[in-house]
Image (cartoon, rainbow over all chains, first blue to last red; front, side, top):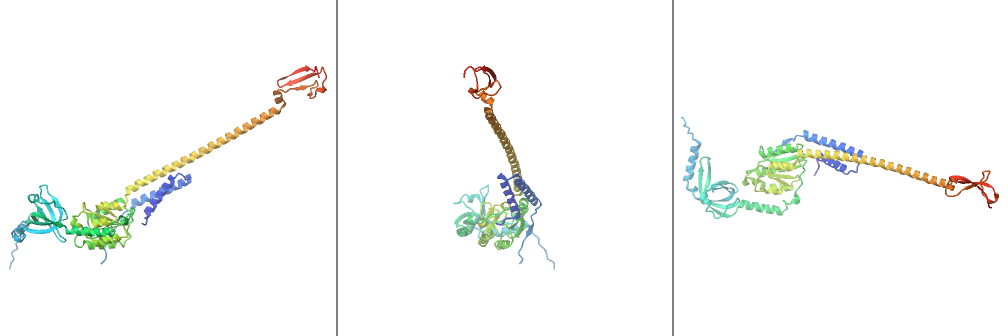
Length: 62
Length: 376
């Protein structure tokens, strides 16, 4: 199944948290990942905040 | 010419019909064959149910006096023959079959046919768990097939918007009961396949079991089995399962439940974000802590190395010092040797240079003595 953009970002966030939990990263790497993760969370929250499902009624034209 | 218009009250009409019905001998003590559905037991011992065949339905009332005499316990789906008379209930303008006896007449045809169809489709593997497609909980678009202006569509839209407003909703209205329902549901379903949907919800709110017939339609069931898009059945019912329930990838017992199966809840996501943030912060703190510790350790190592070096050098100096002092004359004197000088202060290295009576000076490590040579 194709992943949606939202799902891609969410996956990237989880990967970041995982990578940081390994505790094998340098401080610079950790800081860079933290910033990226923080940015993703802000973006995803904003997407949820601003989204408004569009409802479309579909009737077959005869 | 003037017409005199006669206007009757509702009660008058209903009473008239009741009179006609009661006086028609054809409607008295007749036997009617059909299948039991919507069976209910009243508190007073009366039994109420519907008697149906493929096309029609009639209400039946079996009063407690007669119900007590039955030789079997009626159940939904039982094929029976009811002996009774038709009577009209004027207050509601409805008619009923007032039963005096009920006989069993074998398994209900409709249920039997449904059971056969279910077996056939199951044998073909249409209901196999291995065929079930996973539902993407982060959908861009969800298709909904249900009745227009129904509580079902309202509930589904409301809950999708509440949980995951990123998903757009494509609504394919269709009749869900009645003669045209199977055809309309199939048309709507086939139409939905042409849209880029992540999930399809097909269903209706609650309905009596005979109203769910469209969801047992073989063509519809086969179409759902062939769907490229995952399908969630949302057929509101308590006990009966329709074939659409079996063939769908997931089933919910209410439209709201289907919306929940189709989406992740944003509240859950927000909690997940908070957890992710907390965890990242903690990891960052830990990394800083680890680095600090490493620096601290490195400093200690360095200190120790310098200390060791100093110690080593000190020891070397000490050793050299000892070697040196053991080589110096004073060092030799300390070990028990002494130096003897003649009167001119030159060291005496040879006994033959001395004569009896010479005054000689002996130097020890802590002082000196003057002596006379007495013998050579």
